[in-house]
Image (cartoon, rainbow over all chains, first blue to last red; front, top):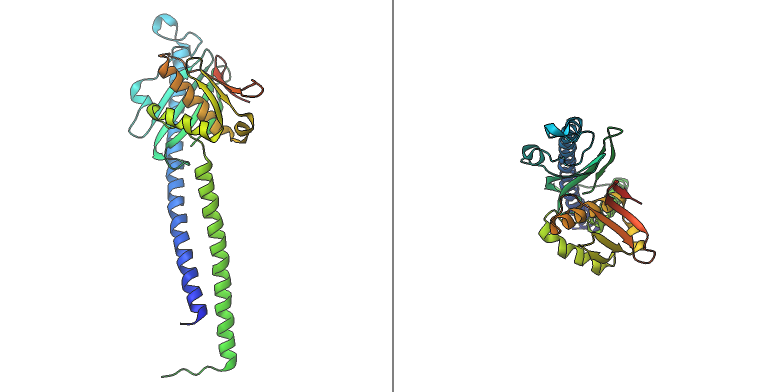
Length: 130
Length: 137
C-alpha cells in the first residue's frame, strides 16, 4: 500500500470520528434548545399566574399589586421534564427553570433563569445559564 | 489483467489523490479545532449543581480555582476574586447567584432567596439578589 493511500485511510478515519462527534453534539444541542424553549414556555405560564396573583386582593389570597407571597401551583412548577423554582419581591418574580437533559457543562441539566417585572410586564432578565 | 497507465494518466491520478488528501487535511484541521473549542467551552463553563446537597463540593472547587474567596451562608454573602469574576459570562454569574441564593435560603430556612456577591479586594457589590431582584454588575 502506498504512502498516499495510508494517509487517506488515516485522514478518512479522523474525519469519520469527527463527524460522529459533531453529529452527537449537534443532536445534544438541538435537544437542549428544545428543552430551554419548553422551560421558557412554562415560565411564561407561571408569569401569567403571578400576574393573576398580583391582581387579586389580599382577602382573596392575592398580592394586591405585589408579587410577594406568590407561590406557583405544584403541578405547574414541576412537570415530567421541567422543574421551576420561584422567588419573588414586590414588583418582580424570579424563575429558575431546570430541564431534564444535560446542558452546556456536560453534567448539570439545562437551566434558564428569568426575572419578570410587574411594572413593565416584561422579562428584564431571560438567560440561558446552562 | 494488468492495467497499463501512461505517464500522463499516472500524473493526473497523483494530482487527484493529492487534492483529496489536502481537502481531507483541511477538514481534519477544522474538525479538530471545533472539537477543541467545544471541549474548552464545556470544561470552562461554571455551573452550580441543581442538587442542593452537591453545592458544598461545587463551592469548594470554585474556592480551589480561586474564583470564590469566602462563602458566608448565614449572611448570604459570597466574596469573590474580582478579576476571575469579571472573566465569567453574564449567564454564568446569574446561574451562580440564583443557585447559591436558593441554597442560602434552604440552609437558613428562609422563604425568599438573597445573596450578595462582594469583591475581595474592593468590597464592591458585584452582583445581588435582594429586594430589587436580580442585579448583575
